[in-house]
Image 1 (cartoon, helix red, strand yellow):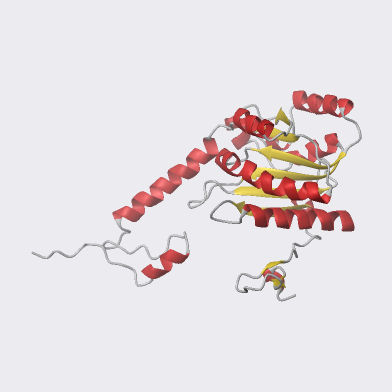
Image 2 (cartoon, helix red, strand yellow):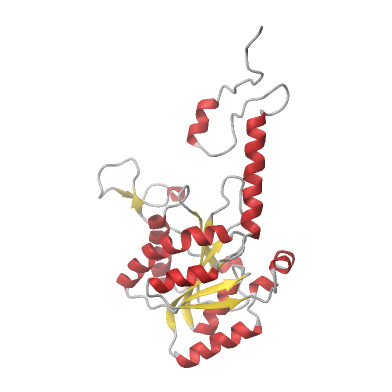
Length: 272
């Protein structure tokens, strides 16, 4: 009896060790193998779960408090998850109670700050739960060394990227950083995005923001993300702008060099 497997391997199978992308899956007849199909369905379920996972703001506030960080809990104008997904515009603005809460905070703490850090669930609360505290531990240590002042960490339920502009404007912050769960992919349900804006105010478009994407263990490391964000903050203050006119030219250690003094710029811009 013929004992051969019905699955035909792809000749590029060895390349799968280099990427999480779905390549070289092989085939069974004219279809993908059952194992590959089940893996796809599992990844799709993970992505859907990430979108609908409730934001554990209580747990995050408790962890921030343990680190000695004050936090404020706000809510967007989207009343629930269904409305948030159907009405992106409502996720970009605070509700009236949250606006009043920020105004009361400013009355009690006048003077403005350099930086407002805003954390929102976005499209993956899972990303926020996993990566906010580890990233902030790296970033705030370096930011404090640079002398940046910051407001309490602002947590926003059902928030989208642009809501950080309103928060920053109300707090009188020179800059805002939004930490938000990115739209899940089929290999990355927990990707955290960072959005930086200089001189935030309501009505700014995405052209006025800089994005650092895919912050997670399998993507951009916390240390590298913090390094790039601090570079943008320094350059933004020097040039008084952010967005498309502010390029990420932060120097990083060369991965193929054992000499720690050997550096290169952004690989997209060529050798420096």
